Amino acid sequence: MAGYSTEERHPSSHGLQAVSAEVALSRLLDAQQAAIGAIRPAMPALARAAQIATDVLRDGRRLGYAGAGSSGLMALSDRLELAGTFGIAPERTPMLFAGGAEALSHMVGGVEDDTGLALRDLLASGLDAGDAVICLSASGRTPYTVEIARQAKAQGVTVIAIANVAGSPLLDGADVAILIETGAEVVAGSTRLGAATAQKVALNMLSVLLGIGLGHVHEGYMVNVVADNAKLVDRATRIVAAVSGVAPDKARAALDRTLGAVKPAILIAAGADPATAAGLLDRHGGHLGPALREIGR
Image (cartoon, rainbow, N blue to C red; front, top):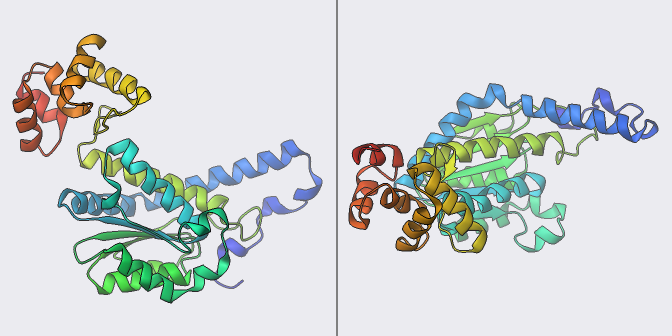
């Protein structure tokens, strides 16, 4: 199909049905690794997108995600993880998925073409001027996603686009265009393979930069979680102990004083009282590094 590199034949597809399972798996893995490698040229655009997303959330605005089919699933996966990894409230990150919750159990193609649905979903999301939205489409031509990007931009929403085909409408109309040119799929047109893998890795990278920018990652630890179950209490205790340098029992005591909030618990374990800890975090925009240095740690 002209203009759709994802629809072309991949060299590793020839005779795929006739080779051994081990050979087929090797071809598939090689193709997945090559798709991930296609992210590298896009890293400057990813960095710009992460800065925009960081600024939007820091300013109290919202960061939306939009997509259909496999690309929508990659967007949804990243969006869902923001709360558990970085403590970002779900209402700050609306999800626009073609077909809604029903499509998660049975994806149908028709909703991808429904521009009226796109407009309704955008209106329901509440995204407005000053917000941002990350729009994903492997082809960059999915009508639902392209329409969301077009309408959002017209309303003053910053549009970040991720697509796998150069020169596509989604990328051409975006404020930040992230092209991950993964090319042909081993199963022609099945963009849940290389294209979706690359999109997911790119989103992982973007959201980690976002977490760092907001001060929610410190020395590789997720420090903005709130320990509200047994697994997270154990994890949070280890994080507080590692960053503050205290024994686990003291780390757990500090967490008890903050009702499971990790950042202030680290500062309390390091010697600050709760009021001082809160003031330090407020003064330094939630970043632990300068807060710890201010109390000599």
